Length: 342
Ligand SMILES: [Ca+2]
Image 1 (cartoon, rainbow, N blue to C red):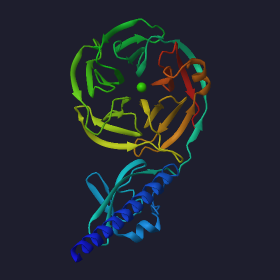
Image 2: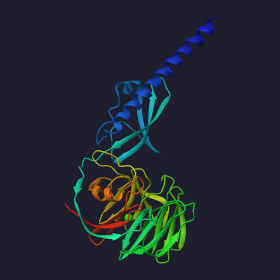
Image 3: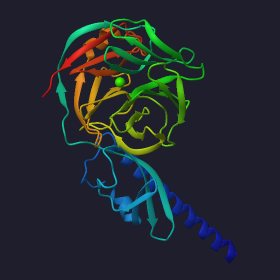
Image 4: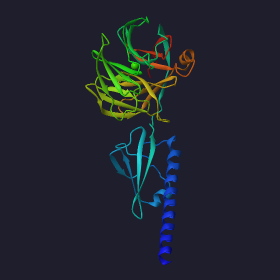
């Protein structure tokens, strides 16, 4: 009888303890969710709920392999934008609790709003599902997506007749592309394979696989040293063109009010990264050092004239001289734009 009572009491204590653990973890989840949109700034404290602090004997936070104690948003560990972290909560009676959470860190800078004027319009192949777009001299290098009709092609600005083109096999869905010397690098969406072509013939030279941290292939540009790729998240990956499977640096794109997800087609120009955001009618100008949004150019009027559905969205940024060139998926026009410089 005595033994049964003891077992019963231990069981009760176990159930009470489990309930308390669940309560603490739910409180933590609820709090962290409530803070996701509001975000934090560097130097802030996570300001976790009292119940969680009082319950714990100590709290550590891990970022993959790295771990810190304390709840201050330290810029040595957190990056601007979206941070995926894990709480390690030490229980007072021994043992640990673990919980994943997202911490959004926002910039203190309010992005400038840049105006623009249209300098000239050129034709664009409405059959081309633009995923990569770059201009060199009079020639446009374009990556055209969709399974079954993907290609990389080159044409003269002002024409839509290919000078040369290379069709992809049906399994590949072409994504971002960029010029590096005499080569064109091109991503694919979910195949996790990139292609390297000869710039003149567009013949495949080699293929490469993505770094494991990249979820998919979206946009691609080159800053003179590194390839810069987007994967549909808010992150930008700096890759070595000699070994694109290796990540040199990761930044995450954030303004003063949001972490910008779905970063799509890219163009590096004069010390900044310009980026489309999937299904948004604007282009962001981003600081390549830390992902901070410096400025925003709103193309709502042009997008309205060219976007009829959900797929034919603004996607394509190139520069030639001082001017920006923009187009979209299945658009019939390329616009040469002069942006306001503040
Ligand atoms: Ca581009």
